[in-house]
Image (cartoon, rainbow, N blue to C red; front, side, top):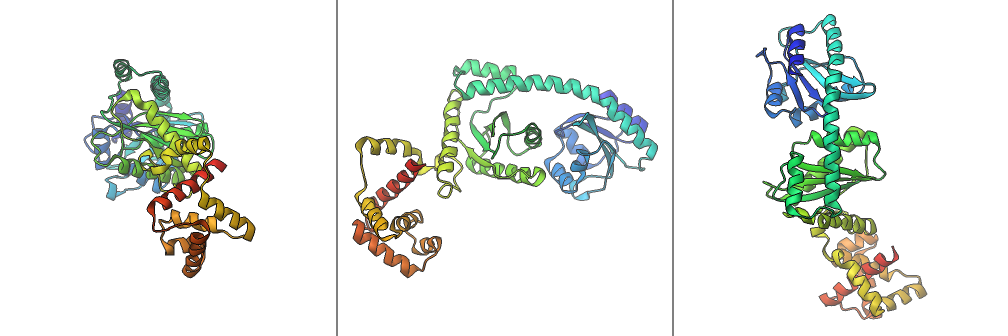
Amino acid sequence: MDELADRISQVLQCPVTIEDANHRLLAYSTHDERTDQARISTIIGRRVPEKVINQLWKEGTIPALLSTKEPIRVKNMAEIGLGHRVAISIWKQEEVLGFIWAIEIDRSLTDEDLALLKKAAQSAKNKLLQLRTRKNRKEERSQEFFWKLLTGHLHIHEEIMNHFQSLQITPASTYGLLVFQFQQNITNKEEQNISYSLKTNQRLKIMLSTIDCNQLILLISADSIQNPFEELSEFAQLFIHKMKERYRITGITPVFSSIYNDYSTITKAYNETLEVLSIKHQFPDETKNIYTYQKLGIYQFFHILLEKRKHEQYENYSLRMLREYDEKHNSNLIETLDVFLSKDTNINDAAKELNVHANTLNYRLKRIAEIGGVDFKDPNQKMTLYIDLKLQKYQRI
């Protein structure tokens, strides 16, 4: 591949780089010292800097490269250290395998040069196919290993470490699981777009990844991160933004586990994410800003509390009296109480949610206190009412 890059550079008389489809550097011409900052950063980091990739998306360069087999001229972008260059995609049928970039430093490439660049892209195809075959084998082994971890089939520390070593993956001392749930099953094309977004990410280290129907599951290194939950949240929002902006994929729900240091407990971390997804589905409004198991609060214990209530055949007297009153008078005192408690007993916020005047809400609260025997100054009673209201909703779902 290095020889090919040097040969293309000699023919075109300009510096050349060859990248895979995820903008990882495969080869670069070595005999020509003329260059620009973007190329220097790419060579040093062995990948195109993320700020350069983002700008090329915004300018329409990468979308163009993903839709044509013709060379694309790229204008100078001084703000990201990118000089004038010509790029061409390396294709196998309808799939892009990689890119060739030629920097125009002293002269612009002629039509004849562009024709030669197209031939170079053809020559590079077989070499990239060979690389992809080896990469695919490794990814298959990685996904098999990941599923063994997720399902608890690997739990001996030494055995787990041996798998990491055989895959040439350095395990982090601390980790978290990040799960993105899509609205529908992920298609092959969407899987390619997801893979591209993950592999061009330079914010977090992703050790392992896999897709299960409509879920993308990631094993994330938490090493050297001061605020893991904050970083995971920011990464998740950035990923969702890019999927919407670049591929028009919307409605993605992110959740993540607690932070662990024992890889034999990955099953526990995975179950945490599934629990968060289940609760968010059942209580979308109450949990719309909750993404991690650590912040589920009382919702962590709902299944235990529900079993206790069923076993004891318990019924909240205050709620029964209010429900009977609502049914008899076609009123909505139960809804009023639910909203009031959910808004942390804030009159103005609850009134706004219920679309009523604050005075109207105060009147309803007095009726709730009278009919249900509710003391709004008693935090224990308020908490019990809040839990029982949510449990009733949980049970109906």
